[in-house]
Image (tube, rainbow, N blue to C red; front, side, top):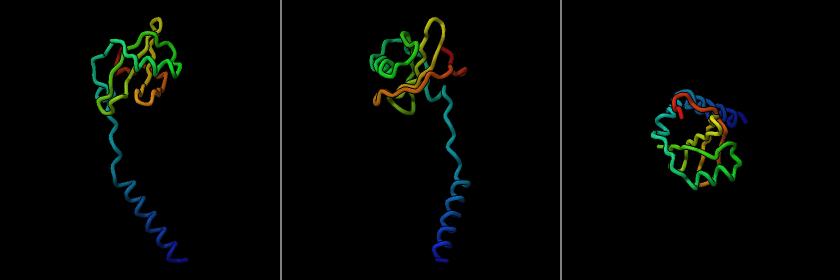
Length: 107
């Protein structure tokens, strides 16, 4: 039993050492992840994903594709002057949002 406790302690210590010594990945700024310019041409795939997920106020939208993940889009929707933001994944037709508009990427 003593050997099992010792082995568990060694494994736990190794895990903690790795967790604290390996730097966390730096997040990429939105302006780099979704480089401009905005696209305003109609995207059927984005419209389908927004509709399927009942996105609010997305009759008119503009979008930018992720530089890091093809098929992922930052979408800004305008409903009577009120902007909302969504993340849209075309392959899975999933979305998140609405989110607030990020000040670093104005509409």
